[in-house]
Image (cartoon, rainbow, N blue to C red):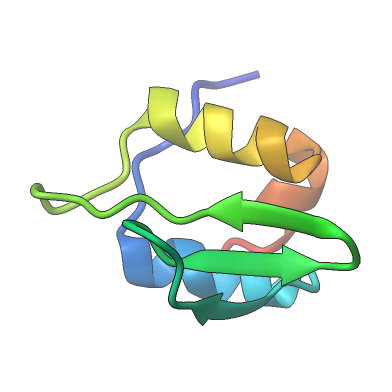
Length: 74
């Protein structure tokens, strides 16, 4: 399986919404998205994209499989 490609924060939010998450909501230092009882932190970036390593951690925390993530690609 190929390595995840970097995505913009906007694309990350859009794809998480497609997977059933709501938000983003204002959190402490970072925005949050929720699905059921699960809350995930959306990174505030200083660069243009969420890199593959950070994206992998977000997906793991959100309990999203690679297959489900790939289904949301445009």
